[in-house]
Length: 174
Image 1 (cartoon, rainbow, N blue to C red):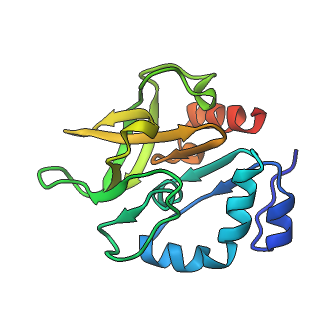
Image 2: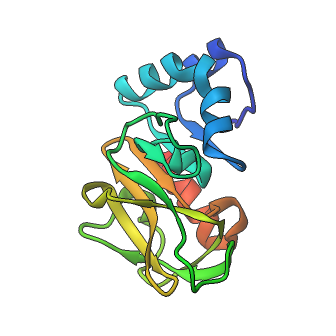
C-alpha cells in the first residue's frame, strides 16, 4: 500500500488505514479536525484501523486541561493533563515501553522494554481501560492506548528508529 498525505475528505474516506499525527495545542487541533470529524468517525465505525500520534492520541480523549471547555473526539474516556511539576517539561527523549495487559497487535514486532521517542508536555490520564502501554517519567505516563481497531501513541513512532518502524508496519498489517 502507498501512503498519502491529504486533507481531502473523499481521499480520507477511501483510506484503508488512517493516521492522525499531531503537534500543537489541543484546542487548535480540535478546530482543525472539525471538518473531518464525520469521516474519522465513519472510518472507525467501519472497523478500519486508526492511529493517532502524539496530539493525535490526545484528541481521541474527552477533554484536555490545555484547552478547558474544548471537547475532544471522546472516542476514549479520559482527560489530558500537564505533566506534573518536578519533571523536565517538555518530556523529550527516549523511554522504555511497559505493556499493560495482553500485548496489542501494534506491538507484535517489538518487546516490552523497547525504547521509543517522546516529545510532549501533556499526557493522557483517567483512561485506564484503554491503556496498552506506559512509560516511566517519574510517574507512569500513558504511552499508548488502544481498543479494537483504534490506537494512539503518545510517543512518535516515526522518530523511534527500528522499533517505531516495526510499530507502523504492524499497524499497516491490521
